[in-house]
Image (cartoon, rainbow, N blue to C red):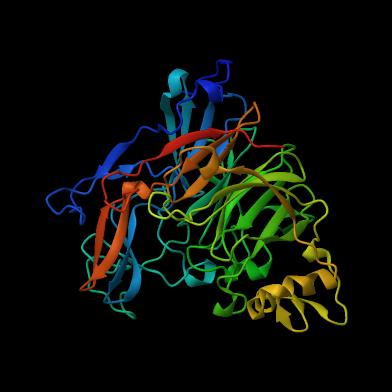
Length: 458
């Protein structure tokens, strides 16, 4: 199918039925649905919930992104990891169109490929380039190895990894029809052309020859501390400024910098990358609650952004659930990359900015009140203002809110991540138990990719 290039009149919120479903195909229906063992689990493709972004010219079209594929927690003979339930799955970008009466149609799918044009996988990277020690298992519960015809052996037949594997989470669409994607492994920022073929890459690994965005003879690299992201908590969201010069990404959660004491903090890092000058800037974002995650970002202009912050709770199962959209401003925030070494402040090559020998994560781990210590040394986080309390505005029953589409009329399209309509519930006798993903505790309402429209307050 080809893109629609008609200048269609934008669908207004008042004419839109909230929660309009995205079409999907069935990827697999061979597994048992653990919630109802007499039924088969329907793994849907779908799974377009990692991020969303506007089509550059068509007001009613939007791009959406899958993650690494249908997977479940698994604890097998090689240790804890993930069972990949659909062999050969390749992450992809989908282009959809919102039509009259809220109908959504799929225009096309763009499969992600390496620089040679080969489809990539969602398998973890080698340790040296972003692997998080997750063991990949196949549908039979066996470790995925270098030689699939031989038994697993850590020395002679080790665990398989994919240097081009990606766990996509953030999507920025450029006016020239290409895409930048951020992921949760490296994290990596990968530039794909309109056909999904890799053309450029930015990560924090100086030895990775794929880092080919070069300014003044040097490749652009992410700050080294970004390699200390937690597994499955990498660069969750990505956008590009309207002038197309600057990528802006935000980590999902606090990082293990330098160790696991940095977990479950309200401190989250934002990075900006000027693709013209090569300048890297870094800012701090403070979550409302250390248990919340940052999961979507879109640029309004060069210094203002909308950002999703939420708790991953199901509103139908927990009345305390929160799904919030903030407008944030970075122009008055402190670029911690620009701070010079002083008596207490030092820039460490691997840990980033330190204060009295402690990383920022260590400082906040001691006491959340230490945000005031940052103030005392003139480090200001980004300013944020609540513009949409989603659950107070619309009927939104999903756990994950990750897709954020800034529309031409100023409204926001919100897209949930349905995890391919499946979830894992527990591990019994080293076997994963997977079931259809349900919104309610009674397991009667199945989750699905749905689109919602809201208008932010000023």
